[in-house]
Length: 307
Figure 1 (cartoon, rainbow, N blue to C red):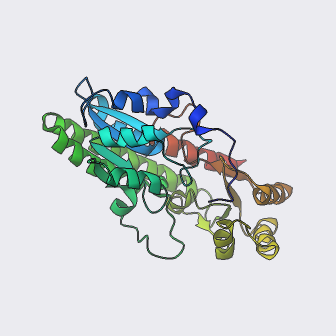
Figure 2 (tube, one colour):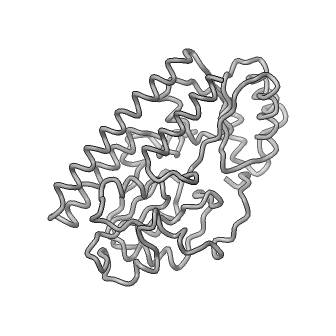
């Protein structure tokens, strides 16, 4: 993802508070107690991002201490370089939750180098990650999030049998929330039947599918967007025409990144009143749970289409 442009933030200069998801731990705190459990007896869980960390929190509740490595929108999970502190966090964790599928290889590597039980969302999802053009952004798949919650509940139950029933109950509650969100997504999409979209990146691809929105972004655009050179002029023009002719009624962009191509597509969409919506890979400010993260995205897309 070398073409993606992020706000310049030195990882080493980030406040220590950004090392933990919702204040539930930090790499320093993780090293202060025996491996796998905190001084308070909580099971230690590490997640590559705060999105997946929030799923672990939903299942573990007060019985777990979750540390999410990436919490800042200025950090790209694809290109993140793990630190010694991150390695220590993984080595002290009982469970490591990663996205997988090439999205956060640094986290998978740290997990495999530790004694933590690895929970790989892409492998759990059932998606075929070997196919060309596979969309690794599994965290926007509500079915995958539900499956991950179930696996986390099982693994936590093994690590902490006393509270196994709590973990199972919490995972079931989380699953019910996902069912409601999927219905919300279907309802929102049904209000705009036969809608097609162009996406500068496949970040929210699984959510668009759940909403019944067809992604008609040219394959060449997606492929070339991953290269240093970016999409060719010809491919950009073809993609732009999908917006200017209104074959696509929605433009979806990565709200955490921006480049000249994205700006060009946004300008073209604006000229013909095609709405554009930004989606994120980590929690925006004020978002604290997975359900809120996905629910807000559905609402933002719905509201943009209704204007």
